[in-house]
Image 1 (cartoon, one colour):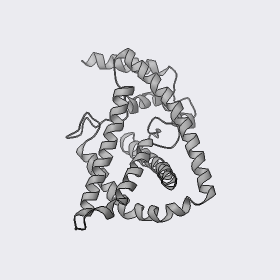
Image 2 (tube, one colour):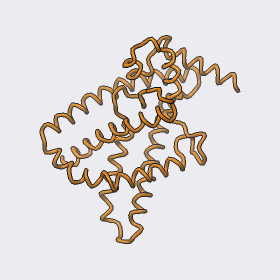
Image 3 (cartoon, one colour):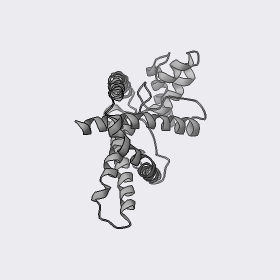
Length: 236
């Protein structure tokens, strides 16, 4: 039971901190200050980062089992990079094949595979893994069991999971609608570009609505996707 609570808490921390990281990175680097909610959930969480933090915690916890030689930390960081890259590829491929949805695109990056992973971001994952190992893992390993002994923390964790599961169910319905539209017009939906297009079309809506519901607009999503499909067809 303790390990279930541990990884449930890690998922929450990873999903929330990953959302903040993506929000800053995408909107300051790519969107030029246009604050758009990353991912497909409405709330402030990205599930892939939740799974990522669980993976990093598990790998860091296995370090004592590695042979005692000076390169073992390097091996650990390489394992973290491989694990995070594999997770990124699996999540991207699932969305691409099952939902006709491309949540990110590394097609312009050197050495990319299907635009889902690339060497540059594998190096970034290695650096983040090293940063996690030195600055975050010691604190989590020491304090997390103490925090999970608190009834208040457990209550807040339960509230998070309840809201999160409802959000995922709602967001999955939206993704399934997008998949149906994508099948009709024979294209893969570039989700971030679609949200930028919709953002431009919903300027009259309150800022909070634009941020929390980046894929809702009038005219409907279908019209935006059809217009994009026609543009792509005209370029061929």
